[in-house]
Length: 399
Image 1 (cartoon, rainbow, N blue to C red):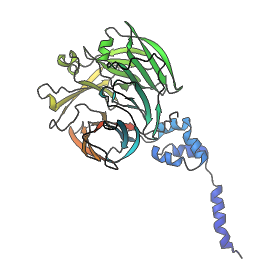
Image 2: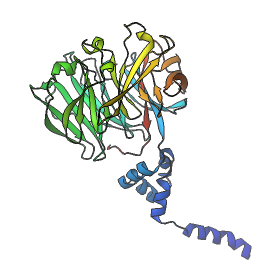
Image 3: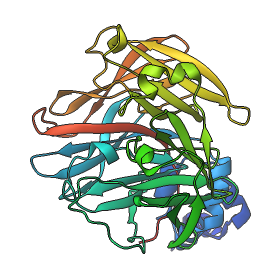
Image 4: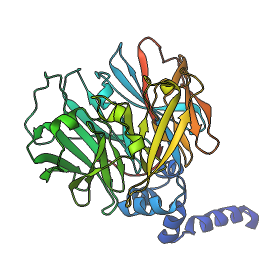
């Protein structure tokens, strides 16, 4: 015989099961939760999965949720041809294995990955002079997308003059990621053919763009192949003289940005391979100049940042290194926060790397250590290619 007390727990459970919250309230609460927690909530129920997967929720979450950043780095094993991708916390600690690509070669000219609004774009070759492939990757969700080949005639990939580029950009006006494909062989006297891949349609389209006066294929080919996107504009370095070529994703037009005279002295602006590289510091376009052959050059690097993009106002920052061994590679890779700049990591052991970080306020270096879960890094065959900071996001990628 059941008593009244025996029935009460079942009644309370039934009442709890009937309790529900408006979908608008659930959406508002979830939109304020960090990305990694949101990903775990996908398995709560089908309605929650549908809500969290909706593009409208992604847009709301990117606007309302706290901005969380993490580190993304790559390593290449020359003995196996495998490229590894990892992520880790800004303050160091254990890292997570994200993905790997087999049958790749180390290509210094195209090793840089560009991160924009939660997505990372990188390129890879399967042989030294082989075809260039482009991938877009979300380090937070571990999803990646291999771009289809642009609909242009295939170049002669036995030619060591690898003059084709994939450039990553983000159009703030349309809130859309885009990838540009440019082949220097398609240069004409005053125009160039550009292929643009849009992530709203997942398709390519072709445009012909007028080139600014003085911009030639030769200056472009000897320029740095790493790009930086700021203010919906993709930037590249040109040589002889040292200038910045800018492509506006909104107007789809080129322009030239002159570097501060002290940022492009005569000694580096007229050489074929000047020691300069574009960087993005605190959301600003910057030029890092590091000449190891000048007096004290190995211990000093100058960064010029375009503080006022509209009026072309540059500000300079000089970084002094304590010794030549403090920095393995003379250029910064990224900014980890408003005042901290990441430099090239060093391999300490088979499962440990050290990342030097420069604080622009204190003008001092510190290091963080990232630990792999198993012995992996070999100083003989494995090279840590780069390290970047990315914003965690829910942005989906087409399968």
